[in-house]
Length: 321
Ligand SMILES: Nc1ncnc2c1ncn2[C@@H]1O[C@H](COP(=O)(O)OP(=O)(O)OP(=O)(O)O)[C@@H](O)[C@H]1O
Ligand code: SF4
Ligand SMILES: [Mg+2]
Image 1 (cartoon, rainbow, N blue to C red):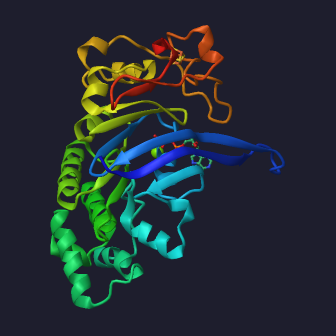
Image 2 (tube, helix red, strand yellow; image 1 turned 60 degrees about the vertical axis):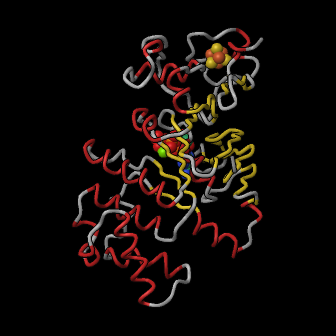
Image 3 (cartoon, helix red, strand yellow; image 1 turned 180 degrees about the vertical axis):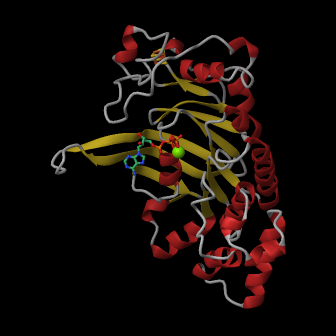
């Protein structure tokens, strides 16, 4: 399978001032040495508790925030891109956000919203621009009469369609969808998910789909990566992950939503307490402060990945031979 994105040892540490006048710098270790391949044409689900670093990974992968480590896009390091290459990358790799209420400029009509990326990327000629706009409207299930209206005139679901249309009008190949349906009513969520699946096929998209809704992730993803405190603790093909989760944290996530996991695991692992602060994360296995199976070694040595199949691996000392 062809890799569209290779993330290698990616870390993000956000500096925060811990004292009033900012004399002491502390860091939020939001992403810790993450390596991850994303294959052409797949939907890779990314799940984990609020604050575990999902959005940070999505933004770092698009070079929207600075990070340590490397990101190869079609085998080229995006950190080495010159201005022109960055512009092409911006066209090819897009982001849609959770909140279609804040991500659309309220003072622009839908036509202006949709033509802005075209103009920025040098598309010229009224006829060509109009053709592209009409085409993306059709693909995203919007009417032509939408064009003269403003974002506030639409419902949440329609606004997310507009945001999707804007993200896809430049025909990107890679899309980071960061909780794209979490702010929508459940009935509308299904429509938007269905739309994304259709667009993925029609436009041959690769999608990094960030969500904490395991039901949605199970439905849409080919593979699923589970994050805990800035690390990917388990990754597997979607059906394998939901049928046969290995990492105690994955099992706990599935136990919390019995309808999405296989029956075997529905009530096996319960975790308590909140996510520890990423300012001062636990050493070694970061999950040891909450893991019901924690052993002495877990707080001393960080576990490496154990591989269970070609697509399935997890970081946990329980599987050491
Ligand atoms: N710009 C920033 N400056 C400082 N800290 C940040 C910044 N952005 C995120 N963080 C912190 O980094 C950690 C990871 O945040 P991130 O937004 O990536 O998590 P998330 O998994 O997307 O959470 P959620 O599910 O709530 O969206 C959190 O502790 C968050 O508070
Ligand atoms: S390494 Fe230890 S603490 Fe971490 S998940 Fe495995 S058993 Fe639990
Ligand atoms: Mg987020």
